[in-house]
Length: 190
Image (cartoon, rainbow, N blue to C red; front, side, top):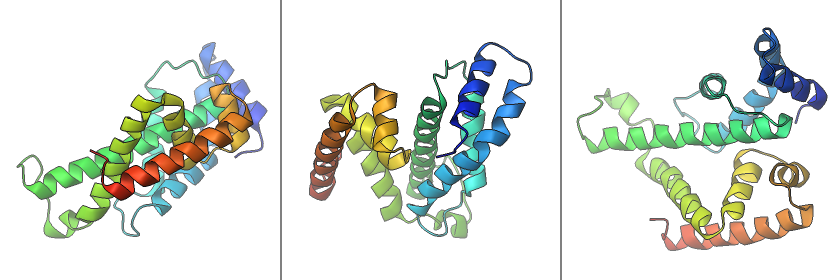
């Protein structure tokens, strides 16, 4: 994570209080970390994924900028960014899968339609569905997976976002990973 956490938190507070230049000062400070986060997400995707890290960062930032979220601090900001990036990738996989099924909504040239394999699209969708099921069982477990796996937050940062102890995060992280592994291995995600 970035070293100038106080700067980010201060700029988020300035943004919340309506300081006119806060948003223009915030982006350069958070951009590098958002790019690192996007790159981490895309490393888990196939090599020829059509989205680039820069595009993912820009899309996520635009979605975040369109909200009036009361950012608590830097960790909260990046946790929300991680969740939004995950949603963008899942939405992209679903759109690609729908286009490949030929439902008539989107016509793609063959080379673009083949860019995301059906198996890769399905894996991402299965993971998203499994996380949704996990959230119904235990919302904190699902949130910990989101923050740790997708957001790249440390145990300490995850504990701070959720307001729990690091010991709780360690235990819940172990249970959640085991549950997801079992669910995805059994093909139980639906």
